[in-house]
Length: 188
Image (tube, rainbow, N blue to C red; front, side, top):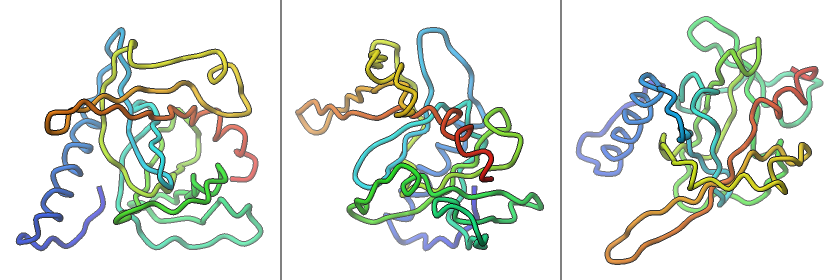
């Protein structure tokens, strides 16, 4: 994870630190379990998205990005990640999402695993929420989404949460990040 200054008196910063440490711990202790899926949940605009935990290496705080000339607009540039040049892709721009995130935006970079691409790649997202495990019953792998390679969607995850005395349900779009990166690999 990235390094940042913490004001210990701020409840919001303390909550952020808890989420950051939970995400880091889940990425480091990832294990495949039959009948379930572990994903990294994040926000783009006002929508929830997820990618497979095993396609990620780590999540870092936003850092200054050095722009690259003559590249597609969704390639934001490069960063030096502990001595390794890493290409940064703006996932929101790549997917043509024009909505801005509501509330406080804490841009993060999800560094992808080497199984996704031989080159070090990070994807810029509006915020990372959590690493979560879902049962296969919570995932809709409808043929309309998973078979349509143009949309790069593996399925829809139904996230059920309980707030106060009510059950709440949200939909998370599960992206096929490997296919998305393969489509643009020549531009990297």
